[in-house]
Every structure is written in C-alpha cells, then in structure tokens.
Length: 213
Image (cartoon, rainbow, N blue to C red; front, side, top):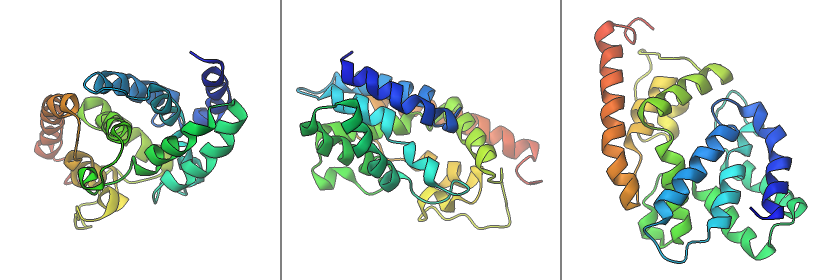
C-alpha cells in the first residue's frame, strides 16, 4: 500500500465511523475486495482509483437528512479535498470522482461507454446490497436513519430512486433486487445472492410480518 493510500484511510476512518455499521469502513473494505475480484477479468484496470473510490464513495451520507436523497454529489465534493490532503496523484482525481458520481446510477451504463473501472466499482458496491448481508445492511441503515421497516399502505414504485426510499422493504423490493450488473463475475454471483434474498423475503411475507407493519 502506498503512503497516500495509508494517509487516505487515516483521514477517512473517523468520518466512516459515523456511518457504521452499514456504510462505514467495513463496507469500504468489502467493496474493494469485490473490485479486486471483478477486475481480474479485465486488462489495464487502475486498482488505485478503485481503492480510493471504495473509501470515499459513501461519505455523502454524512450530508443527508434521514437518509433521504442521493449522496454521490456530496461524496464527490468531499473527495476532492481529501485526495489532495492525502497526496493522491492528481491525474487520478477525475476518474475517482467519475466512479463515485456514477456508483448510484440506475440507467444502463453500457450505453454511456464508461471506463471499465466505473463498471467494476458499480458492481462491487451493489453486490454488497444483495444476499443476506445486503438485507441486513439495509435493515440496519434504515434503523439508523429512522426509516420504517415497511408500510403496506404506500404503493410500491420501482421507477423511483431507491423505491421511493420510503421504507427498508420498499428499497429492497423496488431497488436492490432489480440492480443491473455489468461484470461477468457479478452476474454469476448475483443468481445465488438473489435466491437467498427471495428465500428470506418469502419467509417475511409468509409469517405475516410485512402485512402487520
């Protein structure tokens, strides 16, 4: 690990502690781990920009009220000064910011002809939002920001960002479970993770937990 990367972690860690356990340093480490796995299928991938993006992409959550709204814009604004303070190579700033700005994107990224690092990071972040761990993170996050677990009286709408961000279950059912993935390994892994989600969610509905909230 280079000196600027160590300094970056040292700067960011105190901020990420405020976002634990759902969007803190543990999530950053998991995302970077997936980046390394997905990057193996491509040539000339800049691992350093993926590293920086993993530690910086969710800082925008610090600026949100009750977890509502997008955080990418805020994360990008916070990333610039931190990258400079850490001494990261300035030539990498642009791609790091592009990765961060795009990681919440719901439109087809293939149509935009983006750098492969953007696609790899998108999938690495989103894969941590599915499966048993992904469900757990959403439940914890919703509790931390004061979002409801479920409200059956509010119609579901998958056209809204994060399923309208109304409740944990709105976000899971109408956003997390319909993520579009772009890398080969992510697509392969996704099948198993979605099966886990389906099994858990069917249990919720069958037990009546969702109907009674």
